[in-house]
View (spheres, one colour):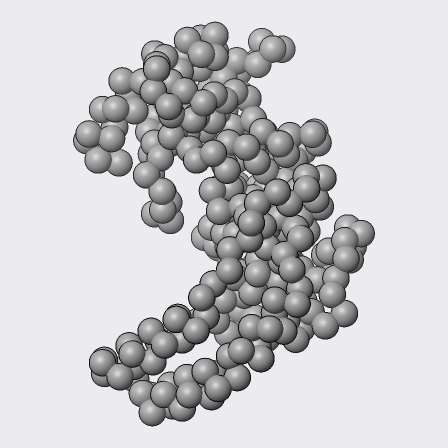
Length: 276
């Protein structure tokens, strides 16, 4: 965290403490290596209604999506996301949404590889999809302009010296030839569900360090309307550079199996959709 960002974060602490009735303890600010956003994050304690101090993470500012979904998915005793202790949409007169959520002591799974990691994250993804299915899809899904992206990819190949350039050029040529057919096949399946949008091992934490502990998904800033295949392929793509890690479990198949286990629908031709 930069000096100016930390100064701002610390300056707003009294207002946050006041908003949560002085239940918040001392804060230790931190930033993870994989953190992409500009939010200030800190560890602290929070005094619950049962007069117990629990370890928490305070985070602000957060986006509207993260605040909305963190609030929505608190129905279960052990939700698939961190438990929420306090939140708000402003701090000290500033339009800064903020969260105080449980501190998860184990993880992320990406720090230590185990062949069971993929199946554990897949189960969490299915539980996330099931929890979010209680809410109608009221947002317009993102539609990528694949023609423009493919054209830009060809320009990059033409203008730069890249390894295996001739192979990439031939692949792009074939891809652009079949692009409309592929896009039409994909668009036949209108997105009618919510997806995490940033499903990877660094966003997978646990409430304890047991090998079979349920995974808790963090960072909900990218939740959006989509198709569960997008989460599955996104997770698998993280491992393409380490193919040996895909030998034990394929993420797409693992999430399909987990969805079936949790009573969710799975497209009959999901492997074809994943390939597209």
